[in-house]
Amino acid sequence: MATFEKGILGGFSGKVGNVVGSRWRGKNVMRSLPQRGNYTPTVKQEEQRLKFKTVIGFLNPLVGILSQYFGSPQGDKSRANLATSYHLKNAVLENPDGTMVMDYPKVLVSKGELRGLDGATVAAAAGRVLNFGWQDNSGQGKATATDTLMVVVYAPDLNLYFTDTSVATRDATTASVTLPEFMASFEVEIWASFTKPETNFAAMSTYMGAVTVL
Image (cartoon, rainbow, N blue to C red):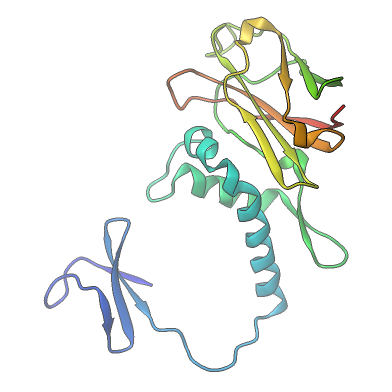
């Protein structure tokens, strides 16, 4: 892929010879046409494709959260782009049979410099309830009592999420979340983080572990 500012007649779109012109993120872009004929990807290429498919499938439902709370945009890279890059490099594993799975303890649903959870606990209770606990570390760094607890719950067997971006304030030190009925009896993976209301400021999320919903 090549970019250009001015061609003979300026930017263009569509096919010209063996290249295609278009606009991408505010830039004029030229791409070569794909080669025709049979092509067999290498083992490494196929592995990378499977990784990408696994990561994208896992992160897509969280794009709204990642786009708001995963670091800061870097040039043309959005927060969602940064989240995808991080998980491709750090949070996907290959099974012995060649399939790919997410490495849940390394998954991040937010990434930032805000103080995260200290002494975090979670326990399942009857009625699909998750009870959370943490220490009030207000005043450490940029942490304040009004920072908001965010919770992300994922049921791997269902490939479905529950999210709540405004569970409680930092100074509450405890909170309960009731999961939807479809998660009853399933094991779920849980992450929690703090965010600062009405900003993109967030903490590095904490992996809370896996519990079975009661």
